[in-house]
Image 1 (cartoon, chains in turn blue, green):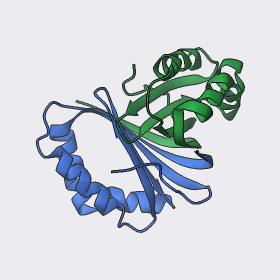
Image 2 (cartoon, rainbow over the protein chains, first blue to last red; image 1 turned 90 degrees about the vertical axis):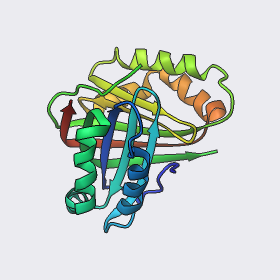
Image 3 (cartoon, helix red, strand yellow; image 1 turned 180 degrees about the vertical axis):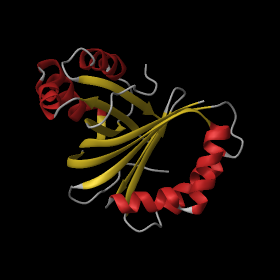
Image 4 (cartoon, rainbow over the protein chains, first blue to last red; image 1 turned 120 degrees about the vertical axis):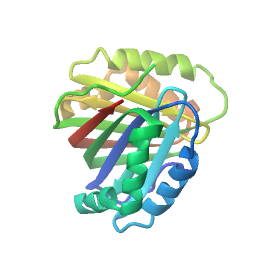
Length: 108
Length: 108
């Protein structure tokens, strides 16, 4: 789904979402794909990076403003996904909103 | 190795490291474990989260100041690992330094 996000020059914002899943898929994979697609259509979206192994999943989305993050948080379809996440899919999660102050890319 | 990092109240700093690996281990796993252990002994270290799948690895480390990040970047053993990373282990990577402005935890 994702590689390394090609974001513009800082400053911009990052939302770091780390989660530990409950067992079984129960519609999670499909919803996750749908949310990535929907997020990427939102105003102010700059990119997304995601990795998951047995212990933890980390998804970082990048945005051009705090308003864009707020609008995505309050998006109706995303609200539904958030509720199902709490009820069914996640054992634990953390959500951090950050200002990216500098970045560096390395390509071989 | 890691679950969700229990960080103190914001503000604090995050370093988001996303990477795509070359094929084969070639000492990577051992060095990665060693670097996590060493990082966690540094002054100002607050926690670390890490996930890797076939496409991407994401490691986020948390620190109490930009000075702590700078000291870790310049740590001699970490410098050696960084050079081997560029030469052998990574196809691409990105490094972002961020100020965490707010966070939220959910535990079932």
